Length: 505
View 1: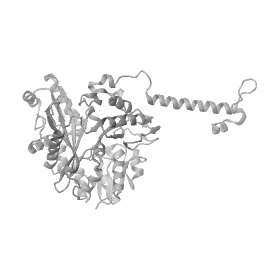
View 2: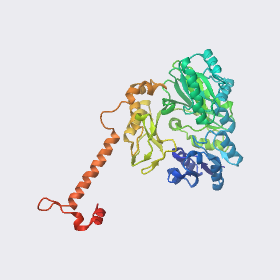
View 3: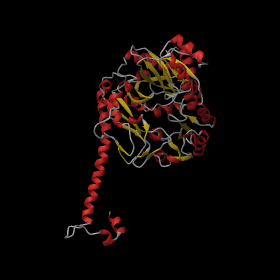
View 4: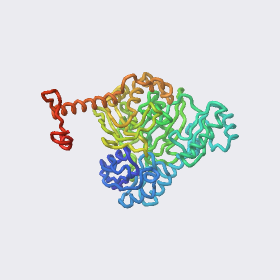
């Protein structure tokens, strides 16, 4: 039995796990860094333990401190969420060595799928289509030239230990190859402590489509359909939706079977995601497997009706999957927008700072997975995501219209956000027609980054608030300082003193 879970994470995913655990009558333990002392995941958990200074390397990536907190709290299990230690095989091993349950796949699956070269070899052995390219790490410049000669240009250089777009370079010409190789290796080494790089053929105008899978400890697997994740900037997702508009029932069944084959090849347990690139002819290729819960999992929950966090917990405590593939039915359509504290007009630079005012959207078909509140300060140390805004509708059009309405209602002042940028995407003709791929943002750059002639809605609201305050103060001032017969106002400072005046104001 799992009676108490320590959540080795922060922010909205920590809250997400707390809520599902509470519905299962499981106690929760939060951990926090210095700057997160007053964070919402600390407030809502049953217990909370300080694990170190604000930088993630000293807190949320500190395995020993997290394990100490788990043992001190008497936790039965650890849920890693996503990011931080969620795909760290060493951490999963340490959790099990400490006598605790790791709510995630076995360390071997994490290690196999975490190394892109090993994952490619494993998928080839399992019969899952992969992008043409190397099955080994690039040895030197001569090796790189020989591979390019065989598979042709353009190609993608990718970090073997990478993710999130780090250590990736697109190469169109022979002249770009060597500088790009050196840059990719340097970036990979700095980001992951491993500068190993491999080569894949570049797929022109691809769709980024991923399949959610569930597996248990008894070899049972199901897939829960696909998510379309092609709206990206710097190889990071911005908007996700399900179902995918280009998917046919036959292609969904075929790709779903391949996703399950990928999971079965590493004896996967729990929730995971198999990602594919799909070209405009319907050819698909394995990209990678994320051995954790994905940021965008709520859209799948909305159309399938399954709580993925609860399923993770049930699998971790040894239960069999309660559903079979023929029981998985997609109903309606769901869209997710990632709300970031960032400035899209300034190369998406993070915009940390204090949230002065916030109003979240409500109403039919609207879900907000967030963690911030008025007065909360977005820290500089972590990912600047504020929340995930999710809408559901009977059709794609209804889900999109609800998202636009929800974004109109969503008001955040004090920091710049991606909300205006997201609304431009949702109103774009090609997006509305489902005619987009991973090049969407670059293709529509002029439209999406066009400077507006008038102030933004957020700026207008801030101006209105300031104007209202000034009018109120002016009204109060006229009452406190009434005009005398000569047309001059009495001096409040002389009559009752500065201290009393400030108190009344």
